[in-house]
Image (cartoon, rainbow, N blue to C red; front, side, top):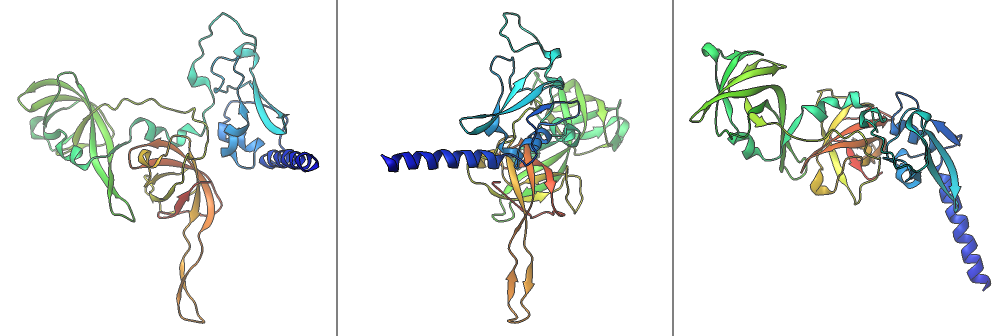
Length: 341
């Protein structure tokens, strides 16, 4: 009986200690959300590791969309069975916590995002990865410009050759960018397609379509490819979370072309949906240790990898994903490693 009681006491004590270790020193008991906050910033006010947020988040089920947090809402920290718990109190502009038969429609856009949307908006809206290299080669392509022009811009007519479906009249125009390969297996993971414009089909004759160029961010060239508009929702509400399984990958590219990576830079990873990655997953970044010469023995010795930051995955493809660096204790680079936090 005494052994059982002692085991229970130790178990409870361990749970209490573990619960306390989640919390950051000097954490608030209550925090009121303000315009400009992100979920990552708020989680960092309460927790040593912001990606642990789902473990303490208990949005009030009486509130419509309890996972959405708005400016003016208050987050209240309490201890439940020895474990920290953050619950939601809606601000005055959002109504009360009482159940009501009235349905309130709230624009999702007003909710605070998980991470700064300005840093990733281009990758959510216009960037595209083509998983299958053959699909890029078989896509319709620009064969001529109006009046034999080699370069075309917004407002011009262009001519494309390929298979066009009557149901699709709007097409994005893409130029082939980098071909991504796995640094270890050399498998082709996908092709980065740079969005340079969009056009609308005016007429089709055989396999030649006439299009009006409605938008262009660069001069459209012969050989540029056409893809139907990609329908996907812009997700800014994902909760930070660890991957469901083990992940071992690499940073293989920095789309904006810099060599030194820091906070709020977007990176491309060689892991995607097939590896279990989901939007909102947080990964630790490890600076790859250098190989140095041991001056005593003359041998080449690799210095251990060093944890140097965190990133959140915000868009996934079959074999690749995009992540946003949320913290970095030193300059990062392509070929640095990512693992479970």
